[in-house]
Length: 517
Image (cartoon, rainbow, N blue to C red):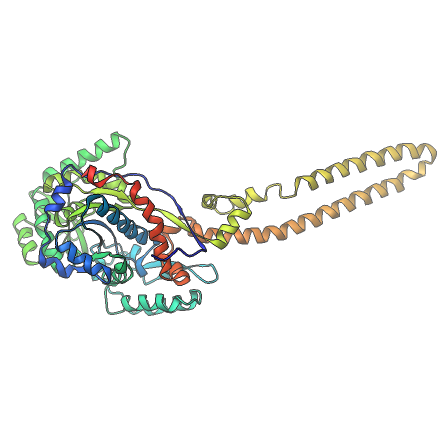
């Protein structure tokens, strides 16, 4: 691993919420042997090729995953993947056996509005919004593994070529994206191959659950969830209510007969609902019997997929997973999935919070130090921090001196006038004029001081704005907005090593996999 670039710092912003594995998970994971038929569903490049062989030879794995995103999406995708790398290495040392990082590409996801765009920080420090295209609100909810990248990607690659800084790494970054985000492929495949190419040298194996081989392996587990849908529906509702009574969130809506299985139909990906002993697709209205869905799982498994509560349990059934690396949203809803594991008879893997943090470049650090502020201060609504910093901008010594001088001029000129008019009453007017002239001179000095401060403040405002665009673009944390290309073009492969170095100390802080499993 190369040394992190000297101009980069990483500030952690920790996520709480480790969820321990069920008792017996370690033994259960060791007992899983991957079906050789699943091999085509995996991608592996570089060091990941040897890891894939280890996985099929009985190695364990630490997984993470994300829905496909344009140009690999926000930085937190990278943070999840490299946390999995760090945790897999830590687990291998603790357990004394091979543990492989696996990235699950959630290509069944149909949220095009999340996957159709990326934000990059340009050479001029502007936040550039790259949008592939919009999907009409009335359009079918097509899974992203069926959504073509299309010709629009050439336009976006052109924008990147024009807007990214001219560095020795820019051509390689653009070449990487051009190899994978092609008009003739789909978003999920582009994402999967880009991640594999990027992270394969660090040992990351990519799993495509939308591959026909994976769909066939997954189908029997989905049939079991459908068979148990009625009692599971009740248990999920009870679990959500129990969590809420205990003050914990239950963000995934359950109940009303909603199963945990999704069906691809005429309106795209659709939820199957229980309805009078049968099933109906929520939006399209297609009706199915249990026998019909069981047959579909055999004949056309490609049309079935798990929802967010079922996916981790299905993963635990299929892969020898020790732990899943999750973001804050997943950590919030995964406690709701406990009944799903019990229904499938699968011991739950541990859930580990991903590393969370921000990149602080040297030029941004200088701004923070200049104004003696922490990075989090820039998370305030735009203008609030500036108002605080500019309040009473006139130096106290100058402000006090001006006030004292005004008071003294008024007092002493009044004393002079009172004494002078006794001798010559006509002197009052010239004395008043002299006093006003003196006060005017003080006002002019104050005006010039304020004007100079305004110029300084313009620079201050510009510097704060640039720092905010780096750390809280669009008013949100950097890792949830900016795309990897922002930093890959500036620092090259050393940036990945630097992020992994930041993630590595995070792994030992997670609870022991061997103890909890």
